[in-house]
Image 1 (cartoon, rainbow, N blue to C red):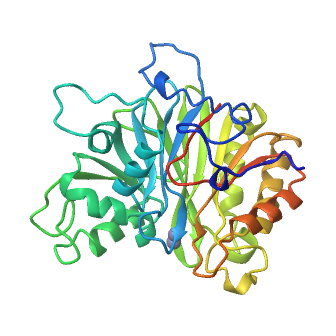
Image 2 (cartoon, protein in one colour):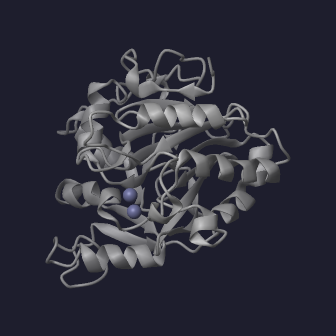
Length: 350
Ligand SMILES: [Zn+2]
Ligand SMILES: [Zn+2]
């Protein structure tokens, strides 16, 4: 049996854990250990909570990943396709058990995490499945920044926060600006601090079938994690944007300070390249990971968690997850640990 695949979604995991193999991902979850770190604390990786695991078409479970350093619970999200429903599911599964709502707060745990623990949003691109949850939650959300490439922030304001699709909760665009969200333009390959957290983020543009998307590299205490928004493979998109991300993080991978990769696989590998529409498949993920491995000196990705995001819910009798698992497992000559995620799961990647 391949040991390389962690298939949390089809196994009944104990509440608050991520599956049958807690040591594998060091996911002894430790939801009770989410206190703020003392100054100078050694790096201990990141916690990720899947608020929305899929790429469509199931509303209520669309791309959104809460991330924070393991030793500091001040978080941001990668994309925000589903927020409140994802927090509710996470809460029901025990992934928020370590969160204590202050006695003087009138909020429940979901509300507390949304408005207090989530300090900002990193939006890869303006497609609905990556930001619908943010828009829908905005009336009851707290003030915080939205971090995105300039083209993405412009699209968010023009398309949604325009007083027609939705009130303008941003600080740009059509008056009156409600200024709940401070739109922060990210400059490619330039790290900026994530306000209210101890993390920083560096954005890299991706090519998503003609749309600009982004990858985010988050850093804390020298550890990094990389999240890919929707992206096509370099050879299909006829560019080097995925490769450019690997170039930027190869040294960290070599030093084992890359703690996890979150990367999309919208379709199984039988999908023709001409019909990828700016998305990846297991075949293309493996090809791209090989590039990173080579840049990092070879045999550099063994045991590295690779979370497969954006799998598309299927209306057919069978979901694609089992086939994805087979394809990834069969091609996994790098020894990475593929994770097929389920909404509401928490992992500690260290
Ligand atoms: Zn998408
Ligand atoms: Zn998209």
